[in-house]
Image (tube, rainbow, N blue to C red; front, top):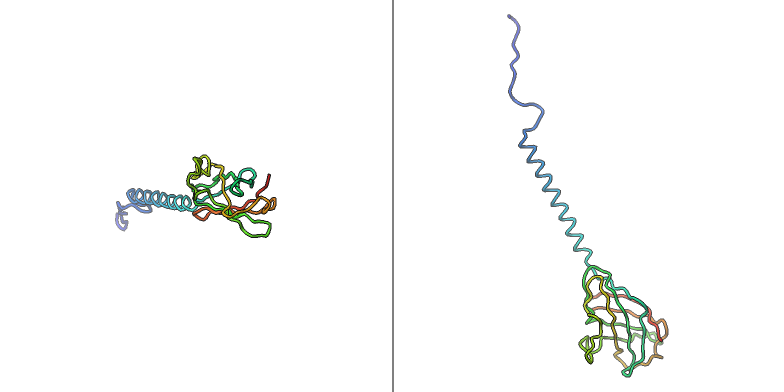
Length: 166
């Protein structure tokens, strides 16, 4: 067999990665995907924790022996709890001036009754009926029917609504 060369076959693998490299790349891909999913979930969860106060029913002004009181039912439709103890309501009078309504005795117990029933701290989904008293001597005639009111909580949440008179 002159002139004919025998082909030498190499035992080296051609065109494929070793199995261990494929396994390492697959594990790295799964870890990277898990980290990305955790990052997206955690930033979204932190970003959507907020208070959304909704007025339930019709807030009403009533005359009392101490002046004027405001009764309003609030619901926390948000995803974070809110404390109404430090809240204040500003109601527009007939002269377009703001009259300040606040919890009786700064939100502490007033004659055995709390100003918000059942509790001034609203967890997500809970509601409470709150009674606010005017800080200055006013009468029911000082407020127009449908007067604009704005409630501000101690942590800065605000909601606006119209009030009625009986």
